[in-house]
Image (cartoon, rainbow, N blue to C red; front, side):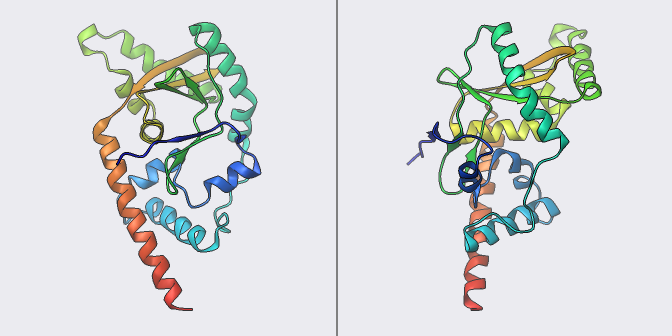
Length: 225
């Protein structure tokens, strides 16, 4: 039976309640680590966090994230970027705190558009936005038959973002995730990312495997008591 995602409008992103709901869950920001080979540091760190949080029920001691200049920048510019997007596209973006699929999986999109679309906002520094614009504009100069899809463009810009957006589509069971990159002094970029069923299949399989590994290690630790 296919699970139905739960939309939590009562939770504010980055609040204490939001932090607690993320404990022992894999979010979209973990998608790149989840899809890494199992021997890599990223995958192992993710598994270690899940093991610890499954046992303790609280956020891991070793990997607490208190933010940095980039996250602070995102918090500052995100409302401006959303308003700019709504003005340019005439779309209405609804705020949601979190989307929860089950006790293991969640995501926190930057907005919802209609019934089938998500919105994800990035607010990079000037030079990064300039680089993104160069990639997009270079593609526009190609003959139409050689132009990349928005999915392939985002892969070229940042494969980590692509995996993040596909994970959000998996959790929310929506069809499209609009990736907006915004800088107040440069043109904005909007890419319509559609479901990549092959990647979503890999996400589902990777989730099953890491769940089994985490539960096995948790049982082994309990036997040591």
